[in-house]
Amino acid sequence: MALSPWSIGVFTSIDAGLGVHLDVARELGVPSIQLHTPHAAGRTPAAAEAFLKKLDQYGIELTCVFGGFDGESYADIPTVEKTIGLVPAETRAARLKEMKEIADFARLLGCDVVGLHLGVVPHDIKSKEYLDVVEVTRQLCDHAAKNEQAIHLETGQETADSLLQFISDTQRPNLFINFDPANMILYGMGEPIEALRKVGKYVRSVHCKDATWSDQPGKTWGAEVPLGKGQVDIALYLKTLKDIGYTGPLTIEREIPQEPERQKAEIQHAVDLLTNLKASLGTK
Ligand code: MG
Image (tube, rainbow, N blue to C red; front, top):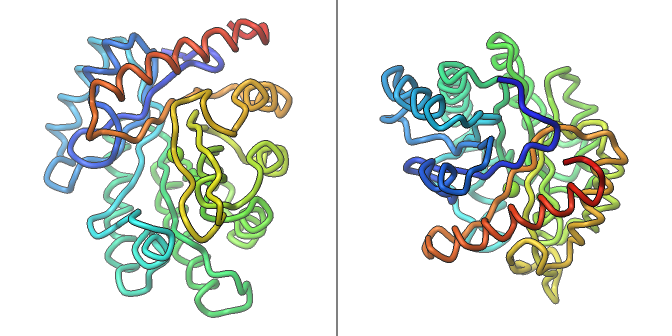
């Protein structure tokens, strides 16, 4: 089933991650989802088959499987630096192995896109730490290439310029970007629209999420807020996606799983907002 351009989607979870359950996506009536990987015990061929059956029954297309690891914490920005993704050296080898398993699970789901938060890439591009992160990313990309998959790096933990440098240094043709405008604000890594224009040629999937700036950008978190209520400027975000020629899905993320009713209501509101903005831009 081929998706229409700018197909609206929602970020979902099974037993890990901050997304809604697939049943909520069905109730919302969206045509596409991204999925946060389940824990290892849930990444079996039988689980993949059961999930695919549900997707087929619901008429929903899976567009990206996101990796994630035990031990990660988004408690504050310094903790992110220590715990997220493939950057922390102590867990890197084990997480690379697990990320390859997640890619293989995505393949069982027929999904050719695997996303992740790589972590906070070291800033000194001549340092061993930086080159090690380049190397592990190459290994992940090469594994994904064997599965005919692309790797999409979630934005926010780097500035647009640093991300461009990193992609250029990694030199892998299947390395792209999942652009999250709210993360640019939450992490204090730059104005999202300007960043999107800079990295546009690599953007192959996006999150529709909103946020307000911290009073100490880069030191403390901004706040994630419902779509349209923050400082991204969602109308300009969509117009910019149009300008850069983006035609992939628009995946809504609202990371408040502790309040499921509110989460669902706010995602419904986001679906309506995006539907109206799409119409106003002539991309129904
Ligand atoms: Mg995101």
